[in-house]
Image (tube, rainbow, N blue to C red):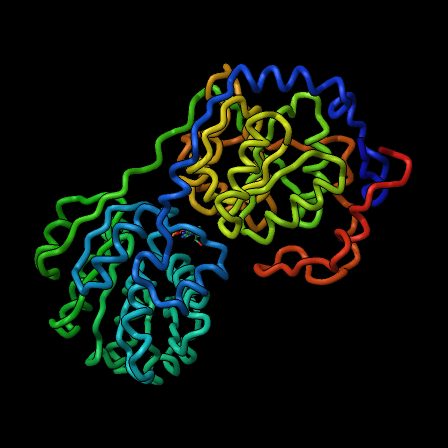
Length: 454
Ligand code: AMP
């Protein structure tokens, strides 16, 4: 067994975790639960390009680390691309923002800039700001620009953006009406209107404002309405402002089995792998599925965990079918203690006897959390789901806790050095979306096992 401990202070005490004697017990357990199913879902999974999206947008979603469309994206993108009005019943966290932004971007790809063609109405500043950020990410590599206008900040930069004819305006109703009354915005070329979180607009008393705004827009437009629930007032509104809408409903995620123990480990981004290595050394970590957000990260984490002396396989969308099957077969048989996977695998893997699911990255979508942790606690009485959380992940974590209907206990290890400095940067660094591979010939030096500790 290799031990990695030099950079993170004292070598972790791994106990008997990966000693040879652990093998027979684990294999026996694995064989008891073994099931020879092929991961059909992976073969048939849909991709963003299957939805008819332009390669520039597929590259953008790939850059954001999205591998497969969420259910609302799968269902809403095709009719929106076809120009239909759509009512989507979906919660925040379902991926609905990209579900409406991607087809809007596609529609504008070939149009000259300089005219405001889309308006997204949001009940809150926070949501408007989030939509603007999502738009920037998805429109990367295109000339399409968006700007958020909301109260509580100066009017002038917003006025400049509106007067320049920014392609997509994201706005809260009150501030937008201010701009409209000053004639800062020209909606004559408007093609698409989105009402996001319509039920919250109703709750916050914005429906009269929304009606005034919609009344000032061209009638010949596409209208998209998203709402977590459909109260009668929203139904009535939709009847007056939409034309023959397609209805799409994405049910809230099912809850995972109650036998799963959920734990959150707060950790700085740069110490995630060290913490992972520490946990993997625990005696009960017999068969561990580690989820990461991107394909590149899957490669890196698998390499680092392998360099720390563990038997690890990896599985993600860039690996061929035969590579995936080999990795899965090795995991299933117990040859590999650990499988590092992206969410593609969560839907495809049917392996029983997984003792732990570790979310190296918090899944951005609560449904993904449910899918991920559902891989453990299948036949055993208990399974454990561990989620690493950096301070930036708190928002996503709250969404998951809401979906579970309970808060998840925070756990810290008393003998883990949470204040260890970030390692020297070799090439690329933690936390960036696009991580570069380290130099060939091995991982960063901190992951090389210490000689004589095998
Ligand atoms: P939303 O429901 O639009 O607020 O999205 C919730 C979160 O899911 C955001 O952080 C998005 O970046 C993320 N997201 C959206 N679509 C996907 C996808 N297809 N795969 C992974 N993450 C996604």
